[in-house]
Image 1 (tube, rainbow, N blue to C red):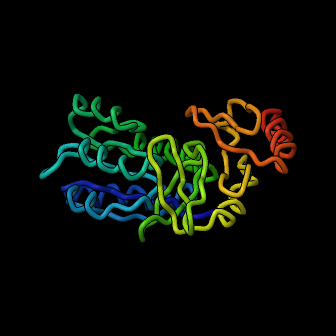
Image 2: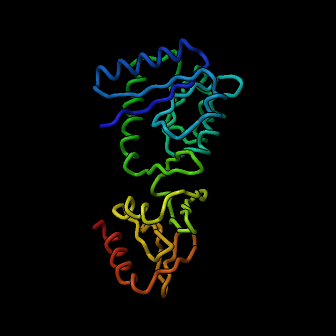
Image 3: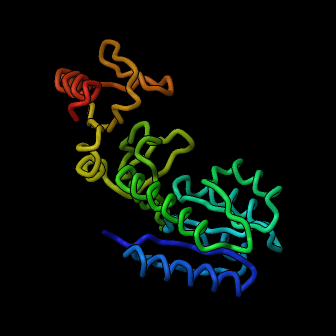
Length: 238
């Protein structure tokens, strides 16, 4: 089982060290392996952020930008990372739920509460790993949750991944994405589209109707197989 990648962001170096030592203790006691990176400047962290981490342990009261703003900017690039706030002021932690934080821990940080929260975070990460894909976009790697992908479109020599929140232009051929995703509920409905069955809400003539309201062409030779695959998916046989 691969290591859990953790980023610790706290402008107090002593606090960073304490959290890192807690992760080492958890590793020794529970046999979990972590790859830990610590940061003492939230602005530098978000400027160089790449969606490589599974868990983000984030102090709220930092300067020049606070932890909630750091989380807000991280969410623009990464919807999957598990965020846990660590703060000495619980009234600020409420704002953390606006950016999809899992929970928060209070300073001074007790070992038992920390270990329980890490256990819960790991369980969430393990549940998400199989549901995400890492794709390359404009020279950087981006993690995308499979459920967020509506369909992938072939456009000349690139692929455009249409997600619920934005479109990603990838330097990956559609056939390569097909080989990665067809066992995960995706179907090549014609030469241009790889659709996520989870977002197919109907079929009309030669078109599949997507949850976003878009109509995508299903080629005549593939329509029968498409309908069989859709029925199989709905029936839970995938």
